[in-house]
Image (cartoon, rainbow, N blue to C red):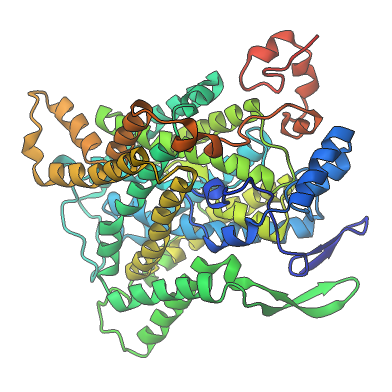
Length: 613
């Protein structure tokens, strides 16, 4: 659709040239916008990874000549709306809706996973409440991050990195669900309501403590020191294990009807891979052309949503034609009564599930998830900056972004969303394609997320999704996460024996140790029940085992920085400061803060590390 603002700036989503990114040789977009919290299209990297040397030379010439306007237009890609541009309000709404739909693949699946680990996956009312709370936290986190955090147009949503440690802890004997998951019947919470709230309170307390650790890492500036020792051979095994750790959950959901599950997988693959370049005519209106059809690549933007919706429609048709028997897990009329009972307006309140509790084993497990989330987010910040027409984020912006993510995770613990928010990289891919990287658009997106959160019927309707469809979506999404993890090793010299040893041993141990410990829980017996639980949670968390092995071997086995991939992995993570970095300054108060001489020593202040006469 075309939009024209008051000064005649035309925004065309389809006729703009293909986005190109000036990367150093061998560097790929996958490693900038990849991460466990995010589902993305790997073919996007092929389109955007073509190096334009002439544009790169012009960019440096512009920097030397002080031509900020030229640099802004030619840095990385030519933007329709760059970071600080303000599109018309109606354009902001439509662009925001597009960004919201891009992230809903993760937002839909993660609350279902949270409900599953709490043993209420078949209760539509409770699942709807968890969904509303998760979307409300995404709304808060997106607004706070874009306004006061890193100040880049980056969306926030529930993090899979924090789900896995919680799942492992709640799989301990004392926290297991009282009954096995029955995919062919409605779930009753009579007599078990206290149990699932107890589980939620355990997750809330651990998330709050772990998020305080993330907050301190950001506000103290320690994140920069920590990242010096974390390279691709540490990150890759962690992300791979996050994806591999979900296969049993995906199989459990899909087992209700394997046909529908694989139909969902097939549709997502069809849209995201085979039809991604096929445009469809969409009705549009502009001042110049009036009513007309605009050709948009719908399949490229919304493959997960379209796959889920078409599979859902198939289930509906086969339900009303009585092809599916009564009680089948894929019938769409199993939970309709709960939708009618759901309130139209539902505003989740802090402490809605009770007072949070703190358990040391789960806190330590959450620490592992927080560290993985931090590494992903730092990479997302730099990728988002490139595709928003902004310079690489300076240290104070990165510190403030991590600090804000920790604060928002703390809020998620207070509200009880089940999972804390993190950066979603699929929206960075949408920015690269649409060339709309305006901060204002993301702030409008946070408003749309807030509306969806308080509209109670919306969450209840999504909670009626048949579990086999969710299982199919998880198969497609988490298989992509595995690929994202593996793609990180492209920075490393994989011809070196040390690299093969570190990566292979990390992944193998990440699979072997948790599996053996799960089958032999009595092998851990220190004489202290709490110490046993701590070791059980840590050693059955695959990403912890893989990450520790990878971190130790990568930092102790001799090797050059080039062999370890540190040079290319951390490329452009630091740069000389210039006036263009003022786009990362805090609103309203930056000039006053810069006037304080001590602000240069505060890691989250805009004047941090400034050299002054």
